Amino acid sequence: MNRKVPGASQFAALIASVKQCRLCEESLPLGPRPVLQIDPRARILIAGQAPGRRVHESGVPFDDPSGDRLREWLGITREVFYDPTKVAILPMGFCYPGTGKSGDLPPRPECEPAWRHQLLQHLREIRLTLVIGQYAQKSHLSPSKKNLTETVRSWKDYGNGLIPLPHPSPRNNIWLKKNPWFNESLLPHLRKAVHDALDM
Ligand code: SF4
Image (cartoon, rainbow, N blue to C red):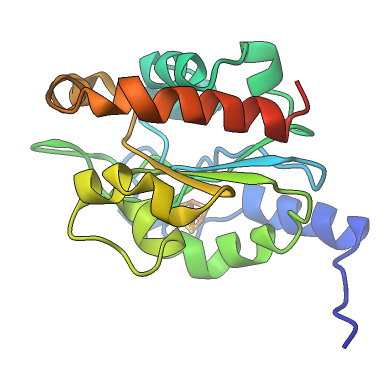
């Protein structure tokens, strides 16, 4: 059966619609500002959580200490990271959702059914998906494990094309200290997988 491949004009129209989205505006403390990076040629998909306040202000995904750590984990420069023909960055919610008592609020649930499913259909060259944090893991990984630590610790279960990761936020420094296997065994595998996916 021939499945219809979405075309370039459809893609451009979709991106224009996303950029103008105001669907959950009433729930967003700083208003809508979708932050994502996408090109149909991308080979790596970063499925993250939602922009933080600083990223909302700059409009650049992972333009913060979390991004610095993520680039270090991946072993790639900012230049490579911000090349949309190499890396697509699609958080679960595209706009900053606000902050609660224990950090940023969950990504807005409206975003995934409204936009994310459609956008993913245009990513046909993806070789590696990095699934960051509990919200993306609930959506991308099945069956999910008991919690984030178990999911990440079971990275070998997901095969070559998918790697679950904790959020690279400085808030997770304690988690990283408690789980030394992450640096010792997962990171070397991650860097190799990233470089292989990009033919570096
Ligand atoms: S979070 Fe998603 S659904 Fe809500 S306004 Fe932003 S782009 Fe639209």
